[in-house]
Image 1 (cartoon, protein in one colour):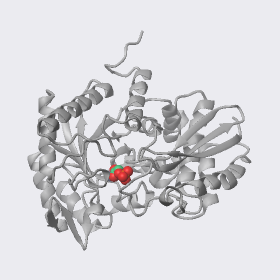
Image 2: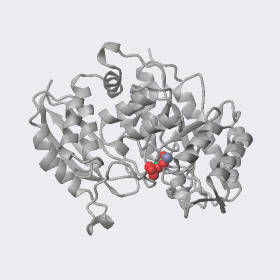
Image 3: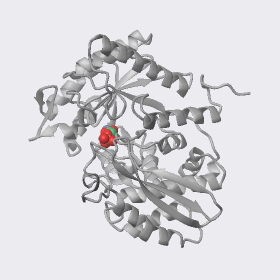
Image 4: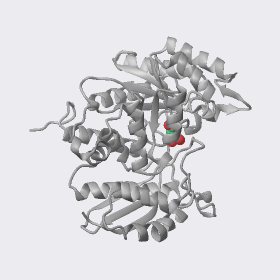
Length: 426
Ligand code: PGA
Ligand code: ZN
């Protein structure tokens, strides 16, 4: 296997036009990987540090410090490793950084290198990235076998911090289930998306898009948005609660001010918010609730899990921030039953896989996720397949950076000759 010969880092722009880190890593054999890092708008407090320059460029959001760390600190050390592997590279990155939140080198600098190495190493072995990840995750001796293909969690209405819609809840998702493969599920989601656009237009709502490609209508109430989704599913010819379910990402930490939750023009305590969710669950074919309570509200989360944990997928995003120790706290305290996985919350591929492993061990569902500020890097599609994730969250079927993930999954599905309606192979 080759040594690392060269690492080149550059500043590119993400889907919001903000700078982010991209890096190309070349091995001595010529194999090469390029990876870039996304960025969130509703970030958990305990995420790995996103190192920004804080100067006159891009309102302080430039990432030249992170690039310098790659060039001056990371590259000279990694290029010395005699036999680099993913775990050795990631351990070296952690040692070089030496802080609990990756604030010295920047989680963005570290992740770009970690993922670029993974892509280069997969190329060197002449195997697809998802297979490389599968080997890291299960061990090479386990062979390569994909049992589950992820279900798309498609965010069709964008509220909260992701658009200027007055909707308090950040994401209104449709979750299509079919037995005929990912391509069919994606088609169902896309058909509902197009139907929703017509419905919104008919009712003279704006059809402008939010950060994740979903619509951002001038609606104030959660139920109004859910009604639109139900109508769109039915008009598209599908059965809500049978073919297609609904999900919400409340991003509740963003709604918490002065110890109360503020949404739908009302004020809620933890207890009244849990009752609100319970009534939504009774009224709508709701399958998942992400960050329904604030990331510090562990007591509330516990009560919610006791009340609705058997009926709903309760996903911790800001709550767990893809952290091994926070996930373990959740397991110990009976909080949540699913985890959102965002590699840039933690900072290396090895740490990401360790968290997924732990979640799977205890039966937590794993949903791999994009960020609201994205690039065209489709790494998370390969990650979701490689670990057999239950779901993938990559926004609406609109805007290139969202489609990059969904379309990559279509390619993987046809490569694996899984059931799919979108390809013909002989
Ligand atoms: P973010 O949102 O990328 O803006 O943090 C995504 C999410 O909360 O799931
Ligand atoms: Zn979230």
